Length: 344
Image (cartoon, rainbow, N blue to C red; front, side):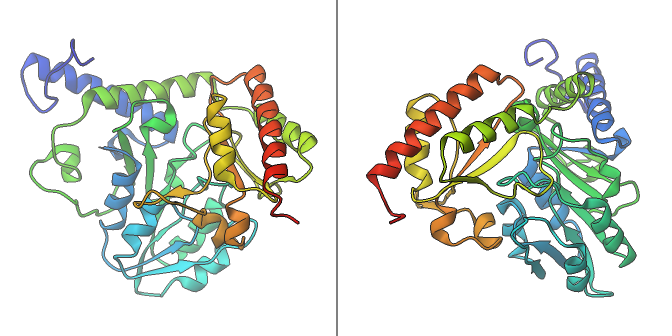
């Protein structure tokens, strides 16, 4: 695409119009995955930009939750926002959203579809009903949901997705904007994307995202079999392990596991040395690892939150790889448990 269809999609010459055709084809493919109209898709650079465009695009009070991604929480810290607390299930209570809405003042409610740390799916239909009855708009950060579970973006007014979560390149994303929603742009300088996101489009990135969406649409959504195999194997081998939010509805690819008595960071390092990439906590600008704000927000102590691993599985993973990860995790966890007996 970069070498064969390199035209500017806004140009009227042949190269530009060819690029435009590719761009619009990709828009249709993504719209099919999100069950919306192609004209409601706005190309962005990723989930963070999509979230910011949605949050800063309306005027008024905003309601969000304590378990959102920083790409939502950081913008909300600069807005007139109320943050709803969430319990140990990591499921947002629609009634708590209702209580946080200020009649005549709340313009937007932002709730993620799937939590990026625990994989818990939020009750969007119920939340949307509450939000729309109050006359507000609903923004959904769907970065962790699209491609993992069935998505109908039209339940919301604004819905964010990110390309690299769909196996497209980094640096491309999109925002669904329901027809009729007035959204103020964050940048100015051109009329691309119906005046919502000016600038020459990333045609190659958009085409890749459209193709990724098409493949998911054709191949179907992932099954929880590998995730369940992983969790079952670790729990059988490591008696001091437990799965966080196991009783809540979750996406099939994400698992968050707590290992009592050991810290997650050395476990991450041990698994990295064996060729497995997992995560624990969040790296802040200082380089220090802080416990997950999501896990502390749902009631975990900082110590317990530091004992957790988040493991994500992809479409290319196999049973053999999962079994190897189970073995490596069990060996590392028992080794660290003996070395650092903080549980005593």
